[in-house]
Length: 320
Image 1: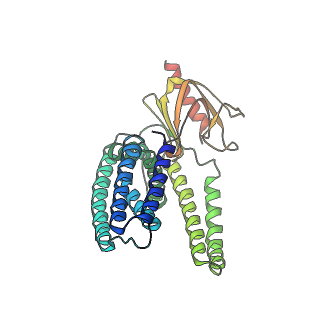
Image 2: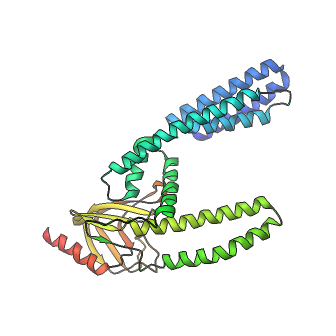
Image 3: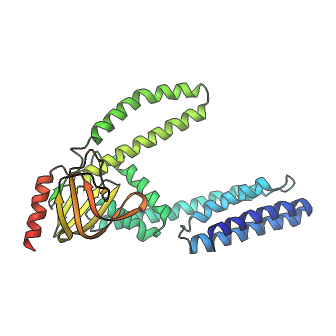
């Protein structure tokens, strides 16, 4: 069943509900109300969860949304027993919190036990194994990683046992971040006060959105600092913060050369900062934010010590 057909069914059901509510008595309307709610939940579960990879937990949010929509569209003479709802929702929330707590414990244990080099990969794999490979969870995973690196990224101390290469020192990300935060600390309170004179809600929305943006900038910068490019046992582990990541065999590298503009490149850094082009013999699959993927044979990248990197790669290739 196509998604637009499901939307049509949903809107038709709501229209039918309104029409019948206007024609029949309260008791029958209430039965129709509950029946429509159940049918729509079943349709949602079957088509959007079973066949379209939505988390099963999303049905709780869908249920709340449906109750509000149906209640709003129903005539005024239909009253839902709100006492039941007020008792039911806290119980559902407590059960959901308990479920979430145990899932988080499981995710934490799997992350700690993972043999992945990067915390980012370990956490993403733990989320996928525990909660499923859902698109919406990839968004949640990225947000949680940003939050983690924003808060704890300043205190992480890890020594790598394999050759590693940083990719942030020659970029202007640190300077850009410092300037943005400095200006923001001065500018944000002033703008908040000015907007608050017009609308307090708008002022808080503006402030929260800006703070959220600062979190992303800080989190991505710290993730880039703590997840360098690594060469381990003939495998190139390439990562640029939360944004890009892939791994491939060293012997899949065809050539290394200084950066020049090329339309066939996938850039893993800003054009002005790239200093190296890596060309591969076979296609590689690069994973980006929120699970997006690109397939390419050439990437443009920034590596702080590109000379040492080229020497090490060439030494590996010469052994083959």
